Length: 256
Image (cartoon, rainbow, N blue to C red; front, side, top):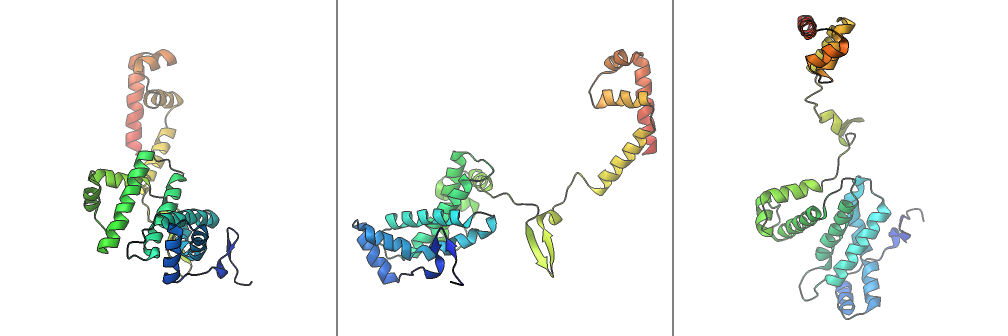
C-alpha cells in the first residue's frame, strides 16, 4: 500500500493494461452492444487517461476533475472508434481524451470566450492534430486556415482566445535555487525609471506653488474647467486666472 495513489477512488497502482489483441477483441464485442466488453475497455485504458492528464498537471486544476473528464473522452473514443481501420486504439484515443480535457479547460476558464469563438478554436485544434498525425510536423496558420476555409485572422484570434492566463509569478527558469518568474522578464514601458523621476520632480515643483495656484491647476487640468468657470468659482477675473495659470506653469517648467 506504500505506493498506492488514488484518483477518484481508483487505485492507479493496480490498473490493468490491455494488450493490443485484447483491446481489438473487446472493441469488436463492444461494437456489437456488449456492455461488459465496453466496461473492460474503459478499465483497461485508464492508464491512457492518466498519461494524458499529466500533460496538464501544471495548470493548477484538480487531478480528480481532469481524470473524470479524461474518462469521458475515453468513452467517446471507444464508442466512435472504427474497427475497420488498421489503427491502434491509443492513436485514436489520446487525441479524443486531450480534446475533451481542453474543452473542459476552455469552458471553465476565468476568461469568458464566446461559444462561436470556442467552436472555431476547437476546429482549429482538431485540424492541427490531424495535420500533425498525417505530416509529422506543425502546420502553419495559413495551412490551418486553408484546411478550414476560414481567414487567417480567425485562426489567430481563436487560438489567442483560448490561451490560459499566465501568472506573473509563474517560474520560467530556476538555477541553484534562484527562480526567475514571468514578472522578472516583463518590462513596463510606462513606469520606467525616467517616468518615476519626472513624477517626483513634478510633485516637488507643484509643492512650491501657492494654494491658489494649486487650486487653479487642479480645476483646469484635472477637473477640465474653463478659465471662465474657474474665475467664477474663485471670485477673480479671467485675466487673473490666466496670469496665475501661466506663472504656475512657468515655475514648474523652470524647476523641472
